[in-house]
Length: 498
Image 1: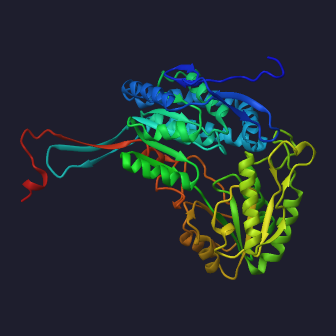
Image 2: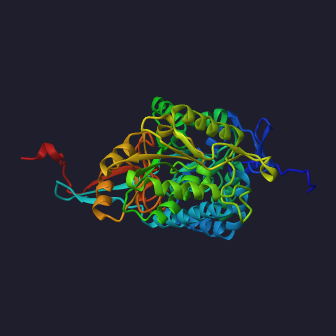
């Protein structure tokens, strides 16, 4: 391959790698350098149609494969990802920008999820219950649903697909996967691993392309029974409306406006380490990012000084470099969005302590870099306190009591991840009881979850479903109640009660 030649990739449909029907392609770019990493199919409705039909055909045989046998393939998937962890992590850093230690963690989460969900292949538990009638058995089992449409974001391009695809498959469903347009290469590499692990043709299919064409076609297709989506709240709510009209099951993981409470007795060294990681890790491009720091007035001055000093020392650069702390945001449009919110914050009267600018010096000139940004004097109700920015921006908000801090924390439309820093067990337990989020940490920043616990949020963060844990199986299976009457006579349950 010459220095200017760029690899061209294909969709995977019915066990075959094929171009888009239109033969159109789109570029995958490195947000740190502007380099073209590859060309992928720019798929449309006709490509989605072919993938759904393949999945529908494969479903009839895949659902009959015993769950432990399905799980054996997923164990092989875990082993293959483990073998390729470093290569996948480096590609992820190139394609979406976050630093190499973080992309290794993203890949590791997919490994962990594959092992965990594969274990569920022998534990897809139903339950038995005593019948109210004699000589009658009563129990229930999980049944698959059919074709599942999976639509994932660019910020965790292996972890999040693993949360959806693996449990869908172990339950006996087949999948059509549309990865984010910014990270198609990771999606394609992920599917390659399933093919190598021995997954039968048609059970997992991938089509790359824009959400407006490929994504909408997947949502609207009458043979797709379930849509699992992670992305913005605005898009998720529109998608939910479409699915409701079509009678589809839909699982939504959407936005967050996460907050950490810092009490006067907190270990401020630990709090600083954790909050810098939560606010600026993944360049703030996480649904669990800490974009609000609610600090008790007695700790405000010292914590503010510590945070600003640390934020100013963070080194921006290509995530493959070992001295880089913060990589680029994913695109020019995302960079503009972040800066627009910074300007909104200034107009609202918040005080900019550090950051607030694009960084384009020297080696950073071709990338989408934004300085880690901290606002002070932020009041509840400001747009920067209420709306998800999805960039390296966090707010300092003062509170004079735990009760007031919790009220501020709960006062947004979102409810994903929250935390409290305190040495007081009573305060910690009170906060756990009163915080309205799906995830609560004590003495750690806002972040995600371990794979064996449920992940998800309240209010406009989701629609009540969870990913991770055994709870995710409820998204991708239906309960079937079974009654076996061996009495030899007609028993009419409640009617025959005396």
